[in-house]
Length: 234
Image 1 (cartoon, one colour):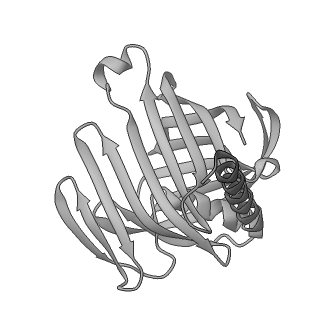
Image 2 (image 1 turned 135 degrees about the vertical axis):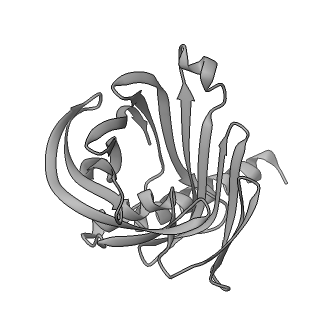
């Protein structure tokens, strides 16, 4: 195959991916955030959504990199990835992986069998799936789509490590916030495991395709972890 023909075919594939992304309301992006632990800057956090091989398939990656003295303790990046498909404006996870130093997790979602199987912390995992179950990464994209369509469910089943947990999701209204990208109108969504004491709040910007621009996790009302957007690439 000639170089020119190969380039032409690549261009067609990219256009096809982009068209599919727009159709489903998912635009690939790469965002960088400042990561804070209890109000102390500890590094950067990166989110990247990009097309994967095959139509209507994507991969979503979250990387946390420690900086400064924190690099002495957390030498390795924390990397989580979710491979998923989109159909009828909903996300269906296909595979999930996480690497945090020597700890790791790998799960495959077999929807025909209705099971999520793999290993986490070197222990085998075999979980029963209900339709609509998400992993801890794919849920972010599902929420983005649900907000776009004005149909955010109150509860989600989420595979977290070796369990399927139920989380409650609540829209807490809107807010105009100042960010490194300028002043943005946002929709605030809070999530909490049923009966848990940790709450994750995320600020999604409709003008940016509902990309999350800020997040805060609290425990018993005290701030533990926060992310604030620094840059965004389309």
